[in-house]
Length: 165
Image 1: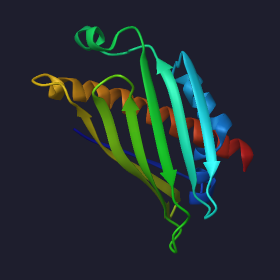
Image 2: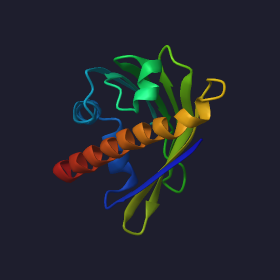
Image 3: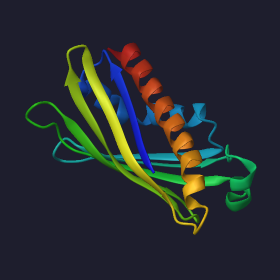
Image 4: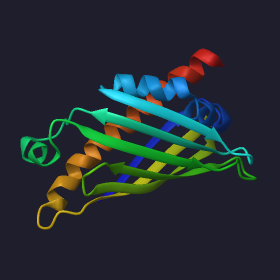
């Protein structure tokens, strides 16, 4: 199932990128999303990009028929490989989200681009739940959870930029 989340900000691309690779921002987003536990690692790349990995354990906030598959908690790994800025100031990232020990994942990308008012961030992805017959019924619920988490990360990042300009 396709996923698309778009946000705009008065922050520049570089300010927004700085928030995406700020450990305290990612930790606060985990806290605000209700993570039971989390670990954040950020590795700057020599070219100006970065690799972000966020591992979190969440209480399943999904319908009961899905909860029976996932149990009392969901372990999620989110990996983002951010590029250096391109000539036009655009940054991109490849994104992989996996739910450990479950046949569910998302592969996608972020595009962080300049806009007249600051910047626009677009995240697109393809969510797959590989369970015969019912996987397609579960995918919309997984999309809702991923989208909610992304919106929290973006909001916390925008607050950080506002407080650190």
